[in-house]
Length: 79
Length: 226
Image 1 (cartoon, each protein chain N blue to C red):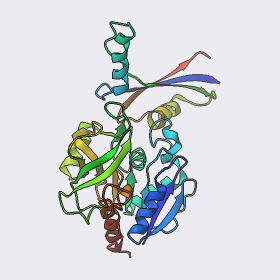
Image 2: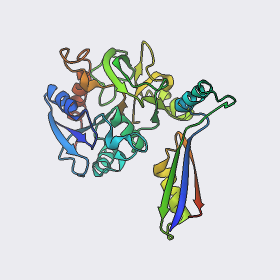
Image 3: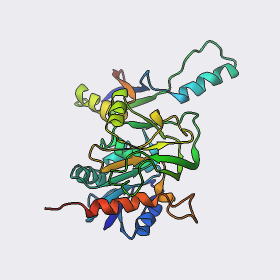
Image 4: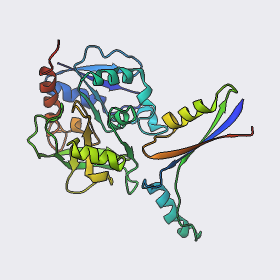
């Protein structure tokens, strides 16, 4: 078994109104100095050892993210 | 003339879509997400709602339903397919239409009657409208902001594939005020607003939505079958 993390984040050119709402809320909570927030998704996968990197790329690119609007990063982590 | 209407877990507007089909004297045929049988229909409506709870992304899971593979195959052969709201999102995820719908600018769920201009009256679903006709139909969504790469948007505009455009205000920040688009052959159309909710002045803001369903009657009649 291996643990794999996939992070999905809106592309830089895509307007992220959720991230903007968070940025605007922070000063109201007393937190200053945060200039930008992008909201994305974080997936944790438990996969069998025979699942190779190419398969993980396909899962991330073809399903967990939509390449029109999102970038993704796949990484194996210590379990 | 048979119009199929798909029901996924979480679909909301299949009943109204079927009613709209019957309103133009077509037979409404219920299609089930877990079947791959299109039951001999001549056209398919992918209705609105929240298929699979919009988990992951709107439409991202519905596109893998067995019925969708059959819809994609039929669309590639020229069967008219209409995606409304969540159905539009599903057609984008399935690759039948380009682009994607994002969270509305302003983050609000928008629910109101919306004016649209019919920009292309040569698609399978819009021939009954006058060019440039303005129609009033309901819109109701939170993920309605159409987005695509700059290159794709240029292509859609250049090829006349923007079918419906918001007028009198853009409700969600959609790029170029795009409310609906079509495939290169004009057989597959997707739009965020709901023509099936505007087929009777008693229950909707107008009966402007009927034009969409009357159009597909013509589109299937003129199909030449070998």
